[in-house]
Image 1 (tube, protein in one colour):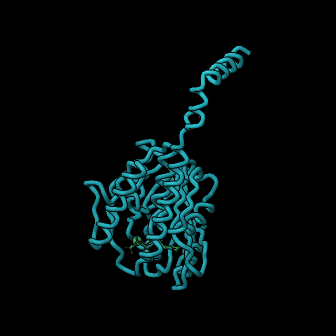
Image 2: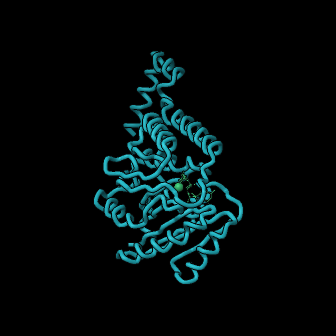
Image 3: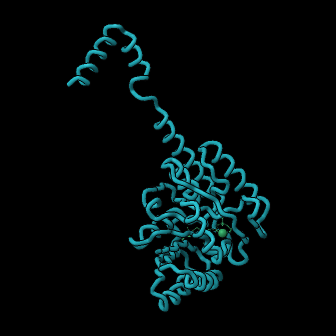
Length: 271
Ligand SMILES: Nc1nc2c(ncn2[C@@H]2O[C@H](COP(=O)(O)OP(=O)(O)OP(=O)(O)O)[C@@H](O)[C@H]2O)c(=O)[nH]1
Ligand SMILES: [Mg+2]
């Protein structure tokens, strides 16, 4: 099995070293072929640390931009770079929110449920969350509730960035959002494709180094854009088929038209 890990990092100099060491240790300990793609942005030295690891391990690819382009855009770039033969794609944060040692359990979960996506979840009874400020947890729970209600996606933790995707499923999903809202967008798209999604409890640890890159205004704008996009899509999908539009109904009620339709139907069936 080929596993491609994709991680976006923006000024995570203190975290990238310990994260990479733990990832290598975990991925080397399970019977898979792996690759690790970093999409690094910023100028704090994160890229130099990652490149030192990449010089030793050919499995590691480092993509780099100086200026941050947004989380969704960074992941789009990372997903484009995953090897063609990847079976699974794993995403996680670079700030040690997500524990690399849990990767084998998430992989077991996608296999056991024959799922398309496994979401590493902070919202199950066995999940553990350490150190997250109350406002973040409350905001995330509210966003999750609103999304689930409006878009009918049966996932409790829709904003979690710790996920395992079947590569074949991920390749079919084309998300539009350039910022944090790409995370729920992927699940909304996947639900529309009838993808099988399951959640697996994780141990989430709030960042101990570096600062949050989630800008409240940019993120709010990206969610507004997502809602707009989804509402337009839903309106298109729920538009009644031509026959039931009012003007067509009138036409069918007209006895002469109804006879015409019947006879033309009969003809096409008969021929
Ligand atoms: N390449 C890139 N990475 C980004 C960008 N924005 C965020 N990230 C990374 O995406 C991940 C999630 O961002 P965080 O700042 O941790 O957001 P968060 O988890 O909601 O906030 P914290 O509470 O600080 O953990 C981290 O690994 C960031 O370094 C971006 O514009 N470009
Ligand atoms: Mg984080």
